[in-house]
Amino acid sequence: MILKTAAVQANIALGIALADRTNLFKALASVGSESAPAHYSEVAKYGNLKPRYTKELLALLACSDIIEVTPDGDHFYIKDAAKEVFTSEIKDKSLAFSTFIPLHAAVFDNIAEVMKCEGPLGMDYSNYGSFYGIMDQFSIVIHKKHLVPDLIPMTGMKEKLIEGIEFLDVGCGSGFHACELGCFNLSIVSQAFPKSHFSGIDLTDSAILKANERKAQMLLPNVEFFQQNAKSMNSEWNNKFDMVMIFDACHDQCRPDLAIKEIHRVLKPGGIFAMVEIDGTSNVHQDKLTFGPAACAFYSASVFHCLAVGSNSEGKKLEGR
Ligand SMILES: C[S@@+](CC[C@H](N)C(=O)[O-])C[C@H]1O[C@@H](n2cnc3c(N)ncnc32)[C@H](O)[C@@H]1O
Image (tube, rainbow, N blue to C red; front, side, top):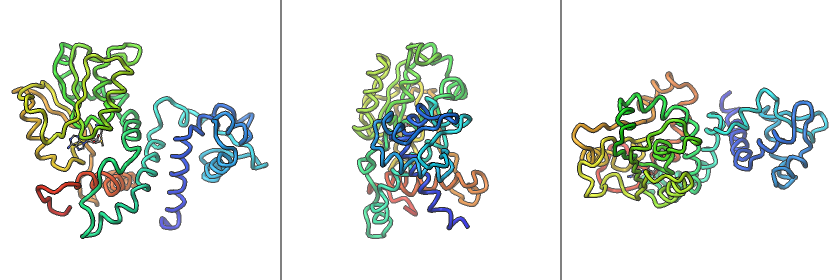
């Protein structure tokens, strides 16, 4: 039964990701409604998209029951009760999950080669064209609401952050967390820590470029980004930081063991290290029981991305990779 529906589900997820990328949902929500469905050409015009492609993608979504179609087959709308899911400023979590599907599909041929015993060790971040943009959106979806009000208090460092400390984000990607914490423009974030200084490091230039763009856009003098490998950070950073955090960026490092050693070196004595990581156990049976079908999204991310970027170097041989 699952085999019979799997391909259909995969096509639906691809369609959702394309509609999200092209802002088709927002265009449809703007020109069509339950009381006045929109002709596909109106949707196309509003969204600056080609009408024929727009019709085809709307058809895919309507046949999936994601949106609605009228009996003439040419008018479409999103049910009023569902509009929020497709138009909210912070993306819906389920919708955000679909945006990873094209990323994974794009490296399908490479992963098939990597899997072979004689194939390459893994994949480089540069193989994943839109990874940083997609990951950035995903982090906003899962962390924006909780970072300052919930997560930071759990570390016991909220008061110290208010007083002013040195903070390091390891594997900062596009800089969302450091900028969110460092932000002191109250119109953007209501609570943050303007007296603290936030540094972020990431392996790749492309991540640091994006992070610096965000910092510039948000006008943040207390945030800095550096291109560095976590396994060998700046040698002058001994005992520099009061707090180090990793957000979803330990499990996909080639040498997380060395990164943890480095974190110990750059932390002041008595400093705090906290990490947000995937809540998996590596016991497939247990993960299946805990997360149900959602576990397959984690394992898919692992096969098509995390394992591949995390295995992409010689060095210490880790059993099973
Ligand atoms: C899953 S992403 C998470 C990014 C960001 N922390 C977030 O939550 O949005 C993992 C990040 O770790 C970075 N990374 C991987 N290996 C690294 C290493 N050895 N040193 C520094 N950063 C690394 C990647 O470039 C990527 O930005």
